[in-house]
Image (tube, rainbow, N blue to C red; front, side, top):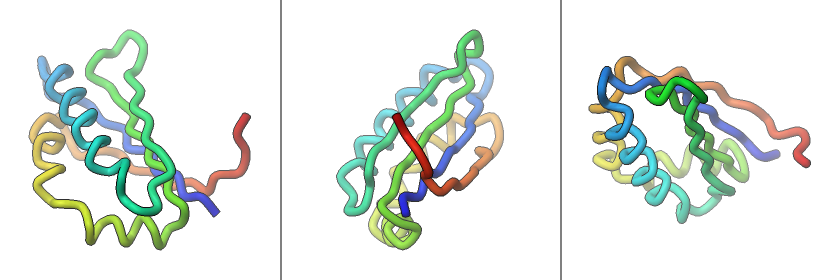
Amino acid sequence: MTLVRHYLMTAKPGGAEMLEAALVALAAVIRPVEGCRGIELLREDGRPGSFVFIERWASRQAHEASGRELPKQSFAPVMAALAHPPEVRCFDHLLAD
């Protein structure tokens, strides 16, 4: 079953553009990893510093394996731009139109 991970993120004050650029760059690193079924990046309407980064994985095992493959330095620009740690939620994908 497909695993979907949502990361709710808030940029440091004045750092919305920096966080957005860091998330776009991170998506480019994650997308080609085996088992990745797609990435989405959403910005909250009316709150330019609030983002949702969504990863879709073939399975929980694929996501766990990606953690061993991805270069840790890929996450540094994202972490540097955050006001606080992201809120992370995991979902089993049930239905899509």
